[in-house]
Image (cartoon, rainbow, N blue to C red; front, top):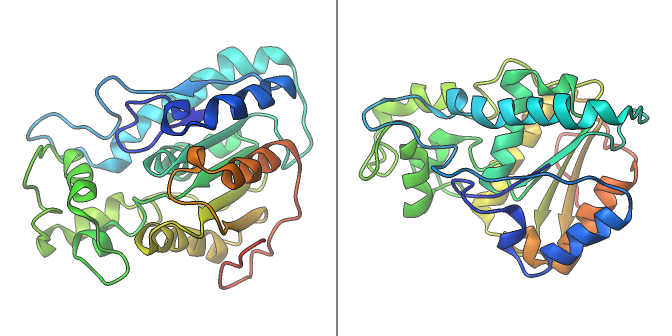
Length: 262
């Protein structure tokens, strides 16, 4: 399953010219593919309703469970642990769609491999909204955060309002969930060496929570030539293809800092 970035209103394959050929290569390898997009955005809450990202992530979690039960289970596959199987990936805010589903909605029970790429940016939300160096959201990203609390413009993240700190922590990808150890699921985070520091730092905060939770199958992969959109990077797509089609050795869960794999 593939989840696109921002509000998720595009198909994953629309975010880079190399994506269609990449998807065809997976089909040629025997995969059945599902892309997800949202007509009104998975992050959007009705005006004035402070739903928050944690609650709104029930949307992608519900889709993941439906596709698993209705499309994957009938195939009768029994993959080895850590191998696709039923696998999910998302880029940027699409990465948050899959990581919230794991931490808050029990999707680790059905997902064999989860591959967040260039994210999740909804980790360490308070650091981004309060403009902590190395984490500060740009104006457009702050607007995305505010959408989840019913603000279409000029919400607390855009205003850097510290009174919202507890709310952001309760909804943040790495602090708002109930579970960060997934014994049967391989988590492989792919980031780009040409991505902006802010995106990578938010992803690192999520990674560190998994390390502290002693996630048994955990990898951090740095692709030097990749920028933010993995769909636009030949090397990034090659790394994603490998992550989906082989079972690499996991990074030890006691590792304190993510290490690049070149």
